[in-house]
Image 1 (cartoon, rainbow, N blue to C red):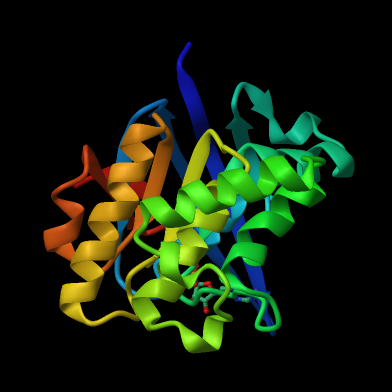
Image 2 (image 1 turned 180 degrees about the vertical axis):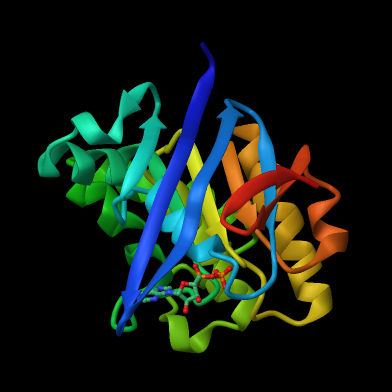
Length: 225
Ligand code: ADP
């Protein structure tokens, strides 16, 4: 059983005024360790909703999410938080780095929260950032970094606690085409190197086809694309 992330008939509905909006109506997916899957679908199809439910940031209204063998429905709040912190790396379209902290500190902090020593956290953060070509930028605050550099720091932060699962929501959607291409390749390279199970939402078909397979959100269901 190498399935790292399983969505089993996941349902998620939102209440919008008088209306119930069924965004996920039984979405199913299983991703193995080492497998990188593209998630596509038009804007509003529910990609962010799906990633949030898969990443334990939001709860399903029905169905089950299984993270590294543990069903989310069996997790208490403490285990959900721990799983999110230690098993799952999340990358958003916007970097959400802490503005008052250096690139290095942004990658060190989540490791301290997870209980690592400062020395070990600093060593890992430095290695990750150097691997992403940011060796000369460690002490820079996010505002002094380019968009591509900011997103590389966000990638390093997502990988800082050695997660088993990587979830990314349009990770290069804010970057110009050439930078997007480079950063996307670096992200995929790291996911492969670490044998992660990854689900990457993207609008960019040229990028999606480089991944192991593509699933599309259609009418609240996941279908092979
Ligand atoms: P995508 O990421 O594919 O663009 P989203 O998951 O962001 O899609 O949104 C899917 C649908 O759910 C949209 O119609 C959106 O307006 C709606 N939606 C998303 N979040 C909420 C929320 N917190 N409350 C109500 N409706 C929401």
